[in-house]
Amino acid sequence: MSSLDSVQLKPSQRQPLLKSRAQRSHSLEASTTKSHPRDDALKGTENASLYFVGTATTILEWEGIRLMTDPNFLHAGDQVHLGPGVTAERRTNPALELDELPSLDGILLSHYHEDHFDRDVEDALDRNFLIVTTPHARQCLTAKDESFCNVHALDFFQSLLLVGDRADKNETRPVIKVTGMPGKHIPSGFLSAANDLLGAVPPTNGWMLELGHGKGQQQGSNAEPGVGYRIYISGDTLFVDDLKRIPEWLNGEKIDLMLIHLGGTSIPSASAPLVMVTMDAVQGLKMMRLMDPDVTVPIHFDDYSVFASPLNDFKKEVQGAGMEGRVVYLDRGEKYAFTVRDCAAGAR
Ligand SMILES: [Zn+2]
Image: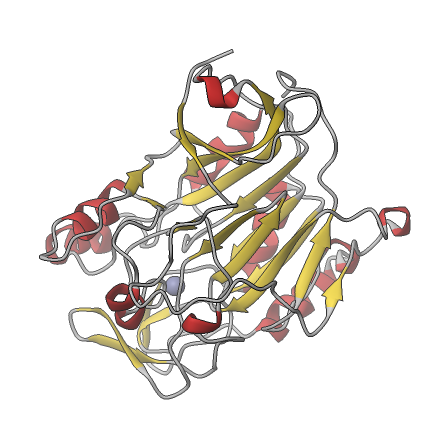
């Protein structure tokens, strides 16, 4: 049993997400809710969901806790600046607008890039809103004139407990253990060295989210919760050797749900690709084989002009490997509902 840093969430009394505080307290209505692709026995037992907004923006809901990943609410035709001489145009619209979001408890930001944290989002966010991110992004967000005041940085394999406030009759509370996972947005070698100088492509995290219940979390014991469901989010990474450290870290434990950032993002542009900085379809399938999750949901595949590997390429790869039953495809505005198992604290 180890002691970890923790943040107490207050879903019943949330911090406003936006400075304007123009937020309504409502639930997130999906156009379609999908369930487990193979196990019909799970139908009707779902107690958590993942809503796809667009790009890498998703909203996780479980036990009254709501977390958003990589907020990007730009529209088709909007431009983002991704580094010296590299811009991209958004091709799609988000499923909902920033001011239509329900209240939230925190943001997980994989890296500080405009297609994951756009300028409008940055301007609009309340400075006290909770953000968990990389050390690099924390530095950027806290060094501004109007700096963010509630930013937690996690390096690879560092963890933070996010503790909910809904205690059950056994006095256990929902806890999400967030752990930074390795990711590499740019290939090693010369390009990586050049990038270190230019600072064009920021360092990036993946995330492991372990959902479970823990006892005494409010009393500062910070004991690790049991794990009733495990979600791995790749972040903007290539399929690199460093990722092999993740199954090692898991030590035989299984991933229930994997969100992979695909798109085969190519810079300076998809029509004149010099270097690929996120996984394409082939690498996505390799990732499925390496991580062996129960279910995979691809995200980040068609929203920007720099994305060169469309979702159909990935579908073909998955089909060719006979792994269709392992993937759930979400359109923007759709939800995947899943079942977090009941489990005792202390079990891993
Ligand atoms: Zn990206």
